[in-house]
Length: 120
Image 1 (cartoon, rainbow, N blue to C red):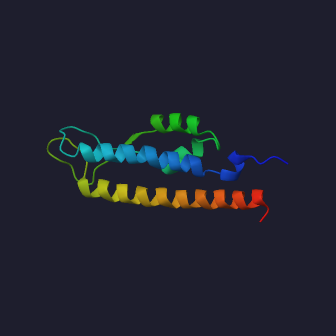
Image 2: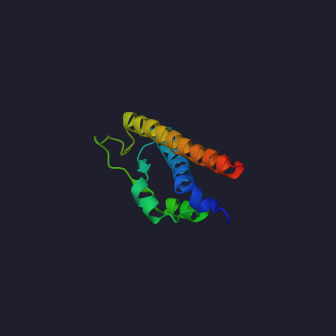
Image 3: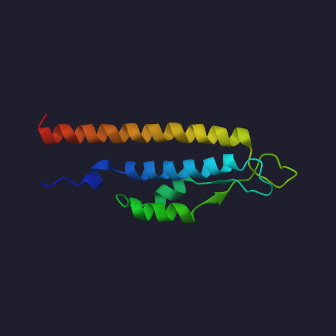
């Protein structure tokens, strides 16, 4: 019986890809914190994962790019910039922790598959 790695890994490769893409977007927001009229962007994990086909990272990446949303600021700025430094830093830290969690789950899956292949 053949092992289907796509099924064995579950949603974790797509989740990691999402977290990487979201890190890039949040980092872009942080880099443009002082740029007039810059609009902060973000991604919705639930929206992306509901559309992401399991085992198809390339297709999931295309859907991520098309799902970028603009964030509504808690407090408006005079120069039209919607990036709020504290909010972006918190979102970046949360995304980093979520990335580590997905990576841990993926490592556990890989270790389990390795043990199964070795017959342990």
